[in-house]
Image (cartoon, rainbow, N blue to C red; front, side, top):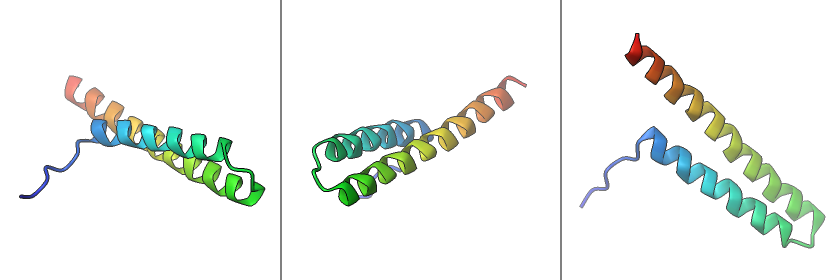
Length: 65
């Protein structure tokens, strides 16, 4: 059975959860290089959230006219 694609709002929420998870992993990581890599991943997900939020806001504004 095929999965239904996620909406932008669902993807945004999922990316936020992933960013939190990567930050949690980074906080418990003792190796500085690994910690930096995990924080980089969190920041990448934060950027995706910002991009999606912008896209969602633009779509809402377009509907309102």
